[in-house]
Image 1 (cartoon, rainbow, N blue to C red):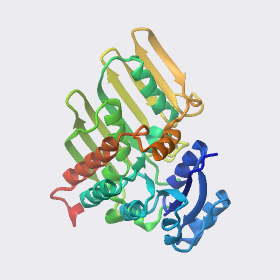
Image 2 (image 1 turned 180 degrees about the vertical axis):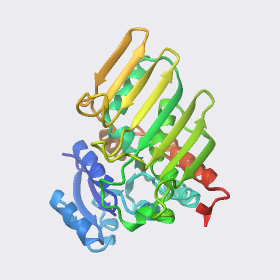
Image 3 (image 1 turned 90 degrees about the vertical axis):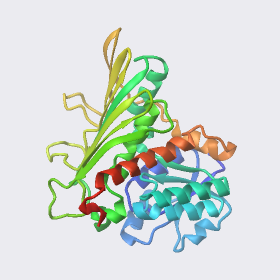
Image 4 (image 1 turned 30 degrees about the vertical axis):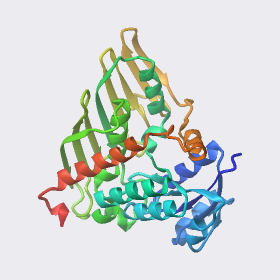
Length: 339
């Protein structure tokens, strides 16, 4: 076990379970959590009995033994939690989106620079998906040549969770491109081997949920770097017949081949998750990635100890969110979403 202790402040999104598990797998000790919601705290505490529930977040922030704060609070609240944690000498691992406005992004950058702490976003559809990690390994080994284009699809289901009211309130969740698509923006930068990119066009709509006027149920964007282009589509349109929450896919085109990921289900019938299809001059190959190692947690803890950036470069972390916020603003410009 590591000597590093961590705590959670804000457990409103179920991604907090993945964040805690990621840090625990890497060896950190989970010691405390703060949640004002009794129903969320009950289930969370039963899952992690080793962590003490505290009534006041200051008990975590003012405890010098706690090195890391992780949060999956309501998206609009995450920046304030992260800033307070850094100002109290903690490193931060947050759920995506790490923030919901350019002002919050600027404040996080400023406080991070002032304090020297680590601010990181666990983009789980990359770092917690073995197929995505293996795609990175294959590309680094030259399996498809130089990447020139990616297509990232992030469909999600509304049916599998009892969604709270904040989920349908634009100001609280940040918009569909800021929220869901931040995953895809980060992966585009990663597979493009770039720290930043440009949003060319973007759109958001509510096509199928008139009873929820604050919900954006589909969004897309065209993006580029100096040497790559990409397309992103995210939605809340997953049909009831699909036996999982979304058929997440990623296609990566290289100069010498391509890779397609079917992250959560292969609708052609192969069982399980994490299907990778590799096509290059050697032929066509299906790779089961379910057992691929996930190094992010270990790298993040090493960064906390050594003050390095091995888990994810700081600029890619920030700029994935900058691109998501830019796309969101571009999509909403001149529309009712600004009201």
